[in-house]
Length: 242
Image (cartoon, rainbow, N blue to C red; front, top):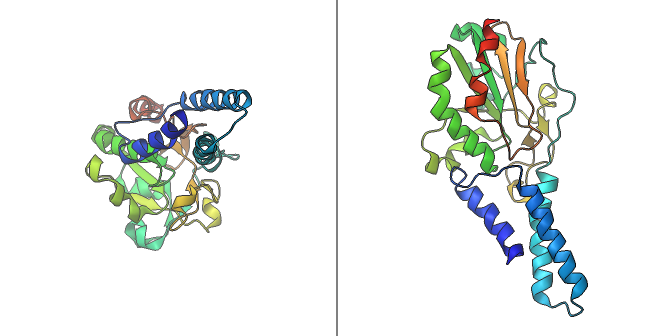
């Protein structure tokens, strides 16, 4: 029953990420299930098909959660450094310009700062949950004069997953083959079932940039299932006034 519960829990989170949210306690829970299964295998000399089916389900769940979902950050830009320009897919680029600059965006919007958010992809339940939070909190950022820009892969596919969450903010698609984006994209990190349209995944991260394009704060989550809340990010806006 525990083995079947893992893929069912994954499916529930994928279909309704706003209701079923993941957190950092999932990994210890999966380890406990594996340990219990190992004890059962060692204690039972007659291993039938139900046990093998349970092992298969566990293997699929852990392969997805701990291999294809493990997106480690390389050496990223530091605070007080210039935020790098990004190369976008032309059909999803704002103002029909494929090269995106944080400083130019702030100048065009006459904004004192910009919150830049990178999400793994539309296949990720926690990314879709975060995107819905952005939409609900975006007005609070705009009252402070801070714009929000969201980047991911397969931007055109995000509305397909947003029916249960209402309107979603626009998501700009990064060019997976551009050298400008190599820090933010992990090749082959998407789950296998999503490889039909996208094999890469964006490394989730959050960046607060001033109107000159310099980084004043950043967050690089080590666990994509435990992303920081938008309310905690709002608390960092005072850095733009320093």
